[in-house]
Image 1 (cartoon, rainbow, N blue to C red):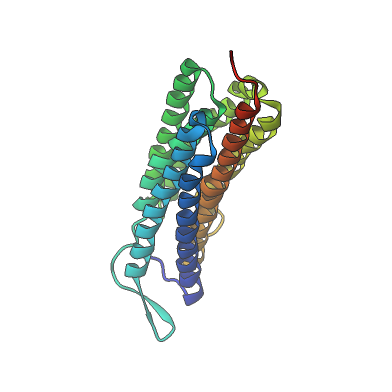
Image 2 (cartoon, one colour):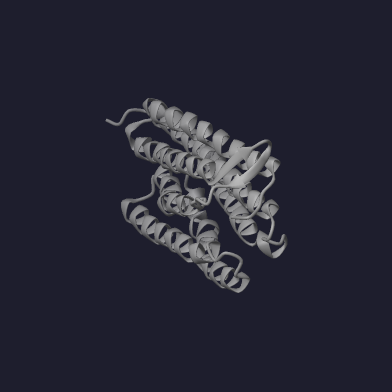
Amino acid sequence: MQAITASQYYLVYNSLSFTIATFAAATLFFWFGRSQCSANYRTAVTITGLVTFIALYHYWRMFESWDAAFNVVNGTIEATGIAYNRAYRYVDWLLTVPLLLIELILVMRLSQAETMSRSIKLGGAAALMIVLGYPGEVSEGMESTRLIWGALSMIPFLYIVMTLYSGLSKSIDQQPENVRGLVSMARSLVVVSWFFYPIVYFLPFVIPMDGGAAFALIEVGYTIADITAKAVFGLLIYMIAVRKSENESDSPAKA
């Protein structure tokens, strides 16, 4: 572990604690809020809550791992010899990142064939992106290894971005008028928040990794991106589901 200062230690410590509370509140909100949605959209909202619940569990494990990795002695930070387990973050992403795309597809209520096709292609690309990024993340200062695996993980990432903006544009245009803007906003939030991850990933090429500053910035950067990509994105999914449910309840009953 890199030597870190007390301020860097508490920055990561407090950010992990805040995120645990955020995901706990978000999970309860989404799952209790399912009753406000029609049956057509409850699966999407359930998955939204599942994403924040999975993130809650892994952030709790990261919090425990961070606490075990250091001791605070007279205001100074001493490593205990127990390594901080960054694998928890990648396991979380491997589970939640494909689900984030699937919940967007489900709330759009596309045809069954398109829903299945988009879910498999986008979910598979998302999982591949995470798997390719992990070896570089744990390369322990080997910049060439981090660069190679980071570049490889950008290939499925760019495929996802292109699919969201080109492949789904027609489907978004077919959404009800009063939710079209929300769906477009949700798509843009995915892309903008996800672009933050590679920025943080390649941060060691800007800030040397021989100090605790870069390590703390990477952890906090990923944490901010997670809150945006999961909790904030989830709120948009919930709003879309509620509005589309209201549209259906207001439409004339079928004969």
